[in-house]
Amino acid sequence: MNSFHLCILAADKPFYDGECVSLVIPTDDGNYGVQAHHHNMISAIVAGTVSFQRNDKEPHEFAAVSQGIMKVENNDVLILVDTAERPDEIDANRAKRDAEEAKEILLQKRSLSEYKEAEARLARALTRIRTKGKIK
Image (cartoon, rainbow, N blue to C red; front, side, top):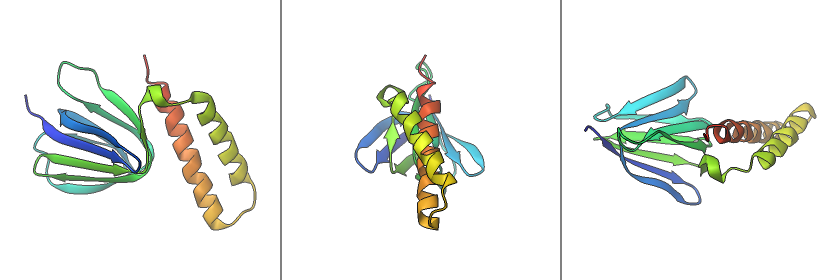
């Protein structure tokens, strides 16, 4: 089985560190897949859902992530993100409240920095809602 080492680190905690056979990350250009022996690269990650599979026999695991960066080098993948949460860790009601509050802020005439912060907050809340829905 072809695999690679994957390390996902959130700002507040290590999220995953182990072997992996496939990985899909959210980028500005859409989802991007990584498998064993991928070419070396660096990519920006946007708020979205990361999907990875530990081995061929197990189902994909999902995580809601905020913005960050991924480095692929010599069959080793490092992902650094502000936040990473498994679907079962997400409070759907809180995520919906956060999304509504962020939408309200976006409708108000505020400073550019407040607007950008609200955009990021909305993206994270919507990602958390979508990822929570992936629990079967």
